[in-house]
Length: 267
Image (cartoon, rainbow, N blue to C red; front, side, top):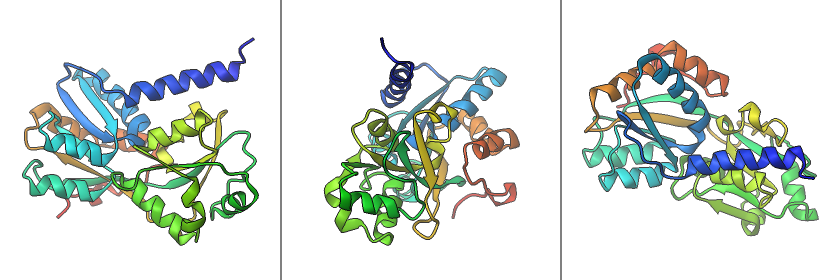
């Protein structure tokens, strides 16, 4: 008999694979967004589409890979990046109207299977002990070479004094969503992830998590920019993302949302 847990897990993994796969759409607005925003942005998009009837096509991935697609002239109207580096790259190439604004900021967390023998500690102390006693096989992380979260996670590991000891155990993956999938599928014993990716109630029975100590990292800024060829519908959704309804959804997923007066264009 197949257990209910395995059936549910297959369902969640299938959902992640759908999110990670390219999709073709005739939507009015095309959005490129870092994968840590998939659950929160999907919920906001559903509200917006039901209210306005405007079609939204959102593709998720690492900020670096999405920026490279925009440079190759893949058609997008909005870009939500987990790193200002890629926004600056687009601005320099005159592919973005300006540097946009910081829509929200994301915490980092340690994510473990529900039955993990590793304790979820904010300072990563038991993860460090798990390296020494053999409880840790692999730690999944977003690749720091093209993800904003990966850069902050790399810094957190360094500040925790674990870079050298963790090096043989690191499984560097294309995006945060891939790192989450690696733990859910059993290929990794732990992951360090953006908080908004694991706050969905769907994962309550499949994993446990703890926010990392903020002595280890700085919250990751989510920068929203309007691309040069964006249409009027894209501008309307850009503005909607700054409204109270959208901001309340972001807060529900644990994002740090600046005061409305502080959501100003980046210089």
